[in-house]
Image (cartoon, each protein chain N blue to C red):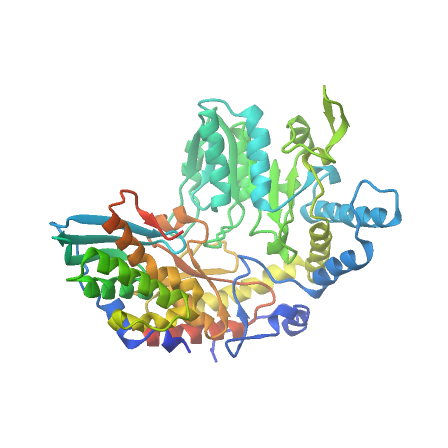
Length: 145
Length: 415
């Protein structure tokens, strides 16, 4: 049933997103856009000595994309750039493959239900696409299409 | 069960009509399908499915070429649809009806072929704030190509075009006014007769996008005096990939071909090609024959119910649905024009349309969520997207009750 998708923790983060504010001293920024639903997201990251010190975001989107961005910001702090990119891969696998769930994902496993809703995968990955673009220093807004 | 009034036109039996649509007899996620997305594409009655099957099983051959029996049969069936479309739109002659892939191609044909010879730098094309992307982008491309200017008729907060503002946009440089008959995103029915009349007074031509009007109301291109009118087959219960462009003979004759190829020529040599007469001049290559035949069956089917009956029943569904949705706290209907087709576009405070769409889907209810290929309309109402329930004559009052119950479930999850 639909409760598999909208687990309690997802609903909580969509209603009360964490780290949802602009960051003035961000060292990297990127914008993400999902043309399918019009969701927009701005991501702010402070990287020092290759470590993600702080992450925040602003934007408007559905429950899945907001919760995904919120939980992503929580799970990135303290990670190195490579660790962050690796987590992105694991997260992507969680949503798009049947591979066993990686323990590195932690709380992010709550998104495993998205697998059964192919039309919603892009909602869950918008923040992560934007992360990749921020870490790689892309200038253009990243699109899910 | 709602206590709202349900009015059904005399002689209209929706349960009997639903029997004609096999797709409606299924369950989705264990619940009976409630299909509320007919503005995206309408479902197909058996009459259409059977006509397409019969063509492939019995009459399949290329048209306009063979002397053999099958080719003559397929040609006759395909051309019969042109005659049916003439009647459907009340055109003067069959030659004014061009087969296209859909309304999008109809608009592109005019923007490209008519635009090539008639638009100069500094000229103006007028569209409206209600347009689908298909009636924006082709004109934008033309304007960029020619150094012309795109002007936009604004609308009010109900989603109605402001005719006094439109009047101000018209001038000696206006070449074309291209507006939708019915808005796909909001359901607004535009006063296209007046819009055409005002354009003509300014010396401009008109194109009416009838994609959302054709399934819901009688169309008379002569009464409207529209210069071009186009609609898609799949929205009028026919197959995808086929549609009709109507154009006045005088204008079509003066326009160059849209695409070159077989069937659109009289004679071809390497030095010079002479083009076929109307309507074939605009129909290069083997067309969507099965689609054309299916469209003919669809128009017959719609006529067998009658567009006046359809419009009357759908209006009752719209009134009922508007009241039912209006009772849901935090729900706001976007698009509240006085003249409106059976489209309920809405937003709910704090809940994103995609979450609404997913939760409804799990209850078997199919709605469209997103910007409906009308991003400027969304911008105008300052929403990123809406949820849209669009109705057809096979929908029932009980299905609207299912929608409101589904929305209660949405609110339970997200509030």
